[in-house]
Image (tube, rainbow, N blue to C red):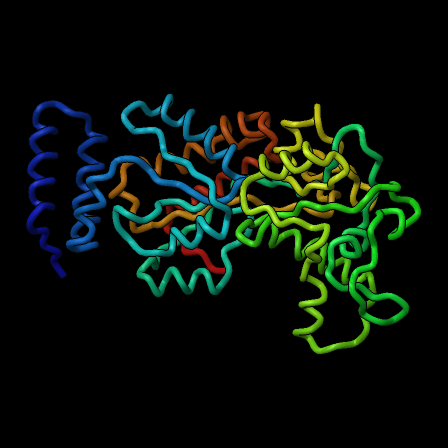
Amino acid sequence: MVCRVTGRPNEWLAMFANEFRKGHSMKTALYASAAVIALAAFGTNAAYAQSRDTIQIAGSSTVLPFASIVAEEFANAFPDFNAPNVAGGGSGGGKRQLCEGVGEATLDIANSSSKMSASELESCQTNGVTDVREVVFGYDGIVFATGIDQGDFALEPVHLYKAIAAQVPVDGELVDNPYTNWSEIDASLPDQAIFVAIPGTNHGTREVFDQRVLEAGCEAAELPEMEEEAMEAACLTPRQDVVVEIAGDYTETLARLQSNPEAVGVFGLSFYDQNRDTLKVATVSGIEPSLDTIAAGDYPVSRPLQFYVKGAHIGVIPGIEDYVAFFLSEQMAGAGGTLEAAGLVPASSEFLAAQLDAFNSAEQYQP
């Protein structure tokens, strides 16, 4: 089948050919060719995508600082490209934007601290986003912290479940949560009023928190027998009196702790590392979160960090392939690289190389 480009795409082709004849680089010509091919494949709507020359990225507040560093360094290393525009909004929000469709008004890359689910991928495909590529670039841990002058917390998932859940088992019956103080849950915990700031449901951190903490704690609490749907609600529904769900980023959680230093806040390890002067971190199951304990797989509340690329925009929005390769470089994501210094737990060189190979070979994401 022969694709014929009409209207504005032909104007782009003529412009790029003219620029190349004037002596522009071969790289410019290659991007021009890729753009015209992509425009032809996209049809009329694709013509608008080429009018945007800045990569648009949004999503996870955990990934946000890493992606912002890469975007700035990318602009320095590749002056022919604009610095990518990186925004927050939560993992769920980023993936929803990615899946809204193809074209100039839609997102190019979604940052996420949780895996794209089957239903999220189905939403993408329904809206014509059929080429979704996952890039895992490292690891992070979810930590629990209080003000630096507060008591020492040695937490287990069951402690957090009993502090947070709307209903908990007491004497074999599920009742409204009666606990007001951590020491009421376990005598080893501080004599400190319960107040917990957890991520809102728009955050990938919340999904991992629910799975690795609340579900695990719920199982350890030995709830009475009930239907599966009721069990899920009992495990994951937070109380409203002493739990606040944070829709914003970690700076909002930090502000809660600054106004109430007794509060326990949920953060990513990298954010905690940047605020060690004001925060004290809890151990979980006897393990203190750190780059070493997460890399070794010892710390129980850790997760991969990734971003999702809209394959249809590659070759249309300039620089996407270069950005991905730069992000996965040893200089940025490798051991001893810039992102490790910012709190990322790095993956191995072999893993990063395999991620880049999969991306370049257009490997499609499967949940």
